[in-house]
Length: 110
Image 1 (cartoon, rainbow, N blue to C red):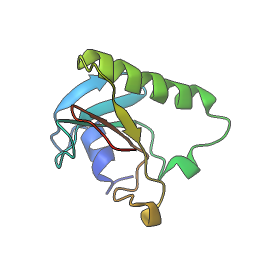
Image 2 (cartoon, rainbow, N blue to C red):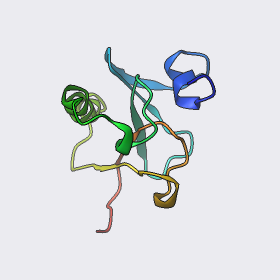
Image 3 (tube, rainbow, N blue to C red):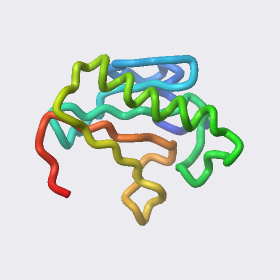
């Protein structure tokens, strides 16, 4: 998507502090962090939300989950972390590109 901010970050047209990358995903620091560690993990392929990830793309879904784990390990996160994805505007999704928030560094309430 030409106008998607995350696609622009993936293409290196917009700067971001990248912390982890594979062929399929990119992880970068959130510009408005909600926790001491707040990283966004996004697939390099554009999907508007989790609802748009094809059911037959189990390989990418697994790589995203393992990429979140590997990003946390690379950042040296210990003591736990929280992973959140918002699916659709009604759920609070602001950017229309599938992404996962990796949050750590504070205690979260259930």
